[in-house]
Length: 621
Image (cartoon, rainbow, N blue to C red; front, side, top):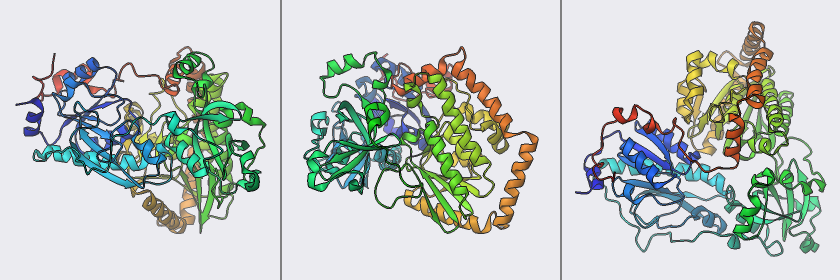
């Protein structure tokens, strides 16, 4: 009897599941939180080399290996000994490394996630579960973090339930399967022909390459990779002329807060980010040019920072912070409904540079001057905030000085939120939140979290960074000193339910994005009317009294000074760990080992504390 078959006959209700993944990305974190909540014992191993993976399996002795994000096949010795489930971001029958890219670029109306068993044929194993979703016009990274992640959560849980039942027999896709094998989507297929491609085609191509690898093109005559594209509904306002569109196609027309507007055959699109580089050079030459040299040519940056030539373009600011009705690029937008003001801030990957923090602080003060009662800070759909912008810091002439400017701008924003006594404030987290962003949200009076959001309220993964954003003031009163220590030391993803259960946040709302926004609007309107039940005026007075009492006991300035003294040591002190960790993070240095807080099977006590699983006589020594 094979080792894998024996697993099917002796699967416990709570299993040991080893995550084998290229990195602990947002999908891996969500599945980790889901399966931990389901009661499974979990450990993580980064896919570094076959012998390392085989060692991890021998140490942890899992009932199941789950691979949420891989870039190469599972080692044969592993999948032959232990059932290995692969999470593939494609419909049943789809095979290949560019599944979601092809779906976006070709305009698929429906896509999905398939959970299949690892075998010799890549993506060709039997299917344990699948889930589909309607596509929307969005970047690959956005679809991945929303629709793909939600579908994967459903499919993985279904696959595990079927695995545990012992009665389900997975089947290989038949000839009638909707998907097919597709090759790697290469730059030749991604290439933009500015004279022939309209705005819709340009958007689709850049969206299909968002995150990685980007689309090789030019911006202001400079070879680069393009990312983060947005439509413009009124290109004529920026000089585009339909009667002479050939002169405008591919030409940079204007800029706005680092984003560049580029003409197309039938309009214009905003390019949010670019990576200056070798353009269409052969791979060997491109790699040689990138080795060493200017670090800014290895980073994805706001377009006009990556391509300084764009700074010669005319600035095209919006007239105000009010949400614009026609499609355009607007990273901070304000709107109202009755007595509630809604402040949106959709920053790429949730990263906040000093300019973004300053503009958001100004927008918050604008909202606080309006004749409303409640301000809801909605962040973006994928991220609320992930704290300071590490790519901008790495690209600076002095990363230490840039870090100092960034954390002070974040603290200014947090202080403006904490001292807003004219309104009740709500942080409504529809997207993930991490590092300083997790504590910035806590500066609001209420924090409402969409079910499915993942929080990472800690700093230590970034070289033992101490952190600021007034966490020493905000956290202990809610969770206690020991609770604060545990949260900061935890270093693992926290589900919305966990964040509320421990007292860090206040309420979990609907998981569907549209339903969440409706629920937030309803609750905010009730808060504007009734406060905490004693009426709005009483709630606002109680808030002001608490703030005054806290300030009398210990001023906010004292908390800030203590935190920043620690941060100054992180930035300017002898220990370089923050700068080293930041460099590896932003340059995406391949992992050479799995951090111990993830790889629990590598802790000294793991070998004696975990019972054996029946298949391991089959695993080669």
